[in-house]
Length: 244
Image (tube, rainbow, N blue to C red; front, side, top):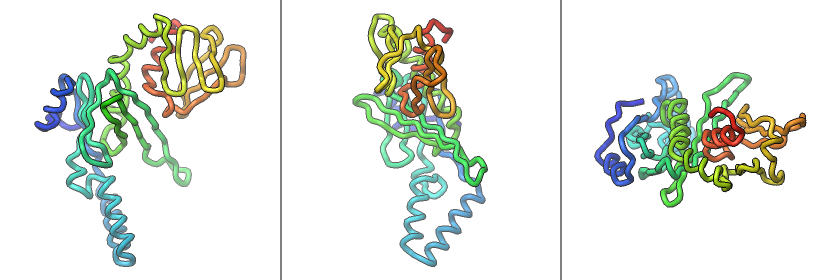
């Protein structure tokens, strides 16, 4: 996390969208020296053998790693009280999104090569009606910090209204799962009344729903298919009378 000093352009965007005070700024993740040297070697080696593949390899690196592109190194993820301003890891033009209308989906994958853990892949897809959408990845340093911040900011901003909708008898969609006072609904499964829900838990990148007295899972869905995961779990807990 870098020192929270936004540019005049970012400050103007935040003021225009009423984002409030700045909370944190994240810069692109730095590449280690040996990794940078390895990519340079690959670029030169490919260029000597095959010019076009060498150029394409360098172009790909410049799009995905700040160490190969001054433009990429200047990108930032800004988190404010009421929303975010982010430069997409791939592409140009800052995207502004507010927490109170944000739809957030997370996809965290632990890669394994030859039986050994590799760097974790983080992909957060954020969108809001009329505001645009963006994919925020481990391109930015500290995904284990800014990822939970995004989820908790959405929970704080949208939680009261969502709970009121549910208490008033409405239904709220969280992607592939819908919640209401009557129960939980899933595609091709229908509705499972809360009295029959034994457990709703997250494990191994999946959200499991288990029916009471049934050894077989009632449903399971990838976490990435659940919109606003932390808000979903808080709503489930409230509807089941559990502490949030």
